[in-house]
Image (cartoon, one colour):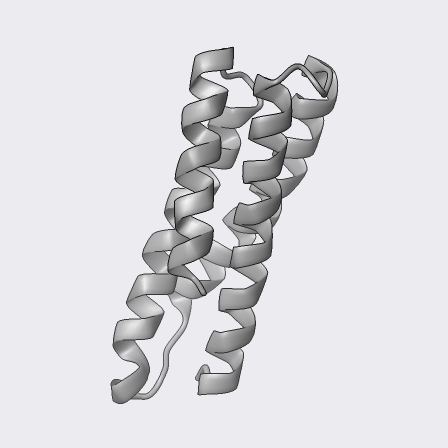
Length: 109
């Protein structure tokens, strides 16, 4: 059973992953990283986000915290997908994914 504190910690962790992914996407789009670095680093971020999403999907919490858990579960899934796509995205897609990840990070503030 996840407490309010645990949900807050999960939110901060997801926010960090999304922010790091957004930075990686912007840097990749601007040519400040290599394709290999982008692919490997986005895969590492994807694995962490995917693990969080899986954990959140199976989690239980108090009824009053259910809306926050649903929001985190949805955003974790969205962040995971974006990070998975980032490693093999075109320059245009990298910019779009960076924007999507930045928006997700803001929603977790």
